[in-house]
Length: 608
Ligand SMILES: [Zn+2]
Ligand SMILES: [Zn+2]
Image (cartoon, rainbow, N blue to C red; front, side):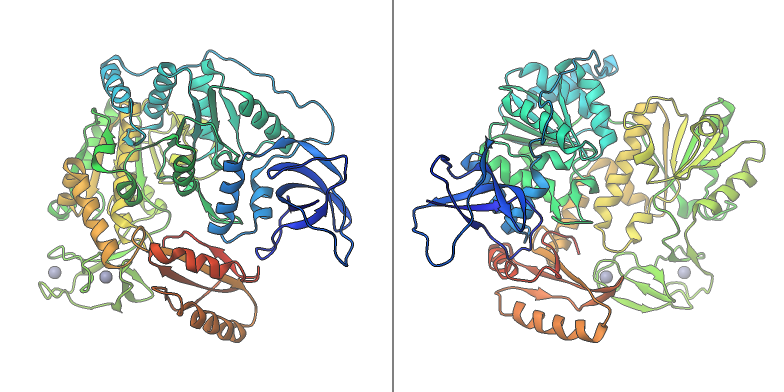
């Protein structure tokens, strides 16, 4: 008998299973973990199939031993599907996913039951009860919850009411996994993260596999484990970019894989976040979305009406007054900019005209003396006059961290102003009266922030509207809601400065209306989730050579129904291009990739 085996090793995408002769004393079936000789060493592998075929001409090697694990049919077929969908070999996917038995040593896992828990203000107890009640008997739900603390409370309440369930919880970062563990430790959850060693992960996986019920909390790597008996999957902060692995192979999106997995193993799937992504709108129908029924008040400051009285066009008198009041109350102020650096846009100081794109009305960003549309990629030269009022007082609006610190020091000379960079001493943070931070500070803050703050001010909330390669509305709502959640949790006032007050009033009142507008525009421009987008890149010094091979590749791609390719562009040390396909033809495109050599790096699920 012959066994076809996937060696557990990083192998090119065109490599499939290898034949091994099964010795008489060993019996194996599909899914068995085995040890095989491979290119001069011994590797673990998974049996793909056993076939009854006599040996011909070439002598094939023998299996060495059978391991103690067997993957079930639904687990192995999920890995095979994943390999196809990610344009990787099954060997590489198994290599990334499976912790392997330690060579020697203890394989037992010692549980550590703690006493941690999570408490919410009494006023929100009924909100939580309603949330849990609405989850009952639903298979798929998107739960809109203001912050990680309340998400964890919802999770804890769910697990407490469903003690027989086997639950997988995926969070975006190791830090968040730790925070969630601390709140759930009374349930003895098993933590599974990429910073653990193979042996540690192996012990934890086997321990969880043996349990009939219980909770595993992990980062995206935990989603790759073989799972067949989960009853419920939770994805916390489901819109976080960390749920996608985009910097190395296999490039995968946890949310997309889990959506497929829950259909295959018939488990519940619940996404929890401060606001939905467009994918969530397509995955979860209206009836499958629930909103935490208590939100924190927000004040919207209209920068258009205040510009004449203010010292800086991005620091209103209203905000100046509120900062002053907060300092008088001896409370800390946190001023937030969405991104590092400045995403400048053109602005008429006389009539507030904002130079929207003439094709699609999106706000345009200033770069290299040109106006660029982040959505339809249109561009035009920088005008010298305002088309509305013919005025010439045009400025590039935008402020960076340093600029904002200077403005604050001038306005509040007696207050201490501290900008928060990556390696900041936490002591100076707790002592400063005014803190200045970017969006990335959210990741550094303790995931469940408890120190009180007096005020959180989004200085330039429109910034995300002008950034290329994003869904600007979705990102703007998400940033707004994340900081509103921090404000709720720290008891801070929440103030938002904008030139688009109507937009932010709609975010407060009817965000779904905005999202459906964005949804329609994604449909009009053939963006995800309406078409599947793929990025193909290749590193190579010689640009001429790349131009030739990419031209040839695009010609071949053009023969696949509905495939459209964008012009290749130069990137660090190589070239890349995006192509897209209608979902019903995605399989044809993915089959085309299975034979493409490995120097093409393929990300099969991107937002262009
Ligand atoms: Zn004007
Ligand atoms: Zn445009």
